[in-house]
Image (cartoon, rainbow, N blue to C red; front, top):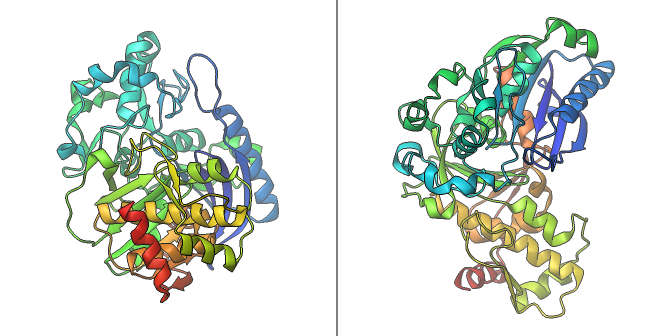
Length: 448
């Protein structure tokens, strides 16, 4: 069975073909996902994304028959649609700071961390704050809304005409969901939004076939089923929920590095350090923490591949050249700290890359400690291809790390919604290095 996975990340949008027989990606189309910086506020270019999705489905279907479609997207994003399914307002970019203008008013109505597991986050990172701001700033347009949809289900609506919601996106620091009662939060009722909330369906639900006009446009079989879809970090987690024995941790890397602990140590989450309760595809709460590691990597390296040598690594370890948090402020475990370099004069480009990789690994270690992470750690996404990140993660946790073989763990997880197949983690297993220099470097960073 071949599943086309529509994967809308914050930085890139992808359509991947996943072969469920081999649990591998066999084709991929990708574009940059740039938001539109114009009135009425910065927003996602859903028109360009829709054209890309349909063109990719048509192109890929000519190469290999597509049997089903699944969807995964980044979080902190939702859509307001009218009765015909058209947007009443553009899909807001969560990096827009407009919602901060009404922070005091929103804080007066939002639920507590104890109720939702959602920390209070800046800009538009709490989806509830986005909807609150949109209702206040654009009351006439908001009044036309017939449904509030999470972002994966907005695309599902466009594909099938069926309006639903789903718990992994509702439970992604939105303020909208109570993971302990599996119901909408008090905010939804306080704001009178419950009537707008589409029915909640499981991520694995088959919503229906692709719309006839889309079948004609893409060449897909008119009976091609579309599955409900889920939040991208939870897509990375799903294969492990189905196959791995707890305790274990999964680190999903992209624009955000999201660490999730399953069966770990019991700890009290600290909302001031960007820890939160996610809700997995089975509906269960998952202690999580994150930082904007992919964005930091791009800023620190200009997004360019870096050459490095063993001598570069040895030099960085020996002189303990440290990058301390945080390059991207306002989120993550050190949201108010300004980045600084220590013992880092005259670093070569290779040495600088090693220190950056170590910094990202040690930020991830901090996240895992904050959520009680235990057992082996599987790294999904781009950082799985960085052996320096992987080795420092193993050194600092003292536990093995598995670097996932797939280019994006989200695609495999999202494709599994269309099947009952289970998957064992595939990838190279790295044990903590025996050389003391790695652990000593980690300790120096943590002390600094």
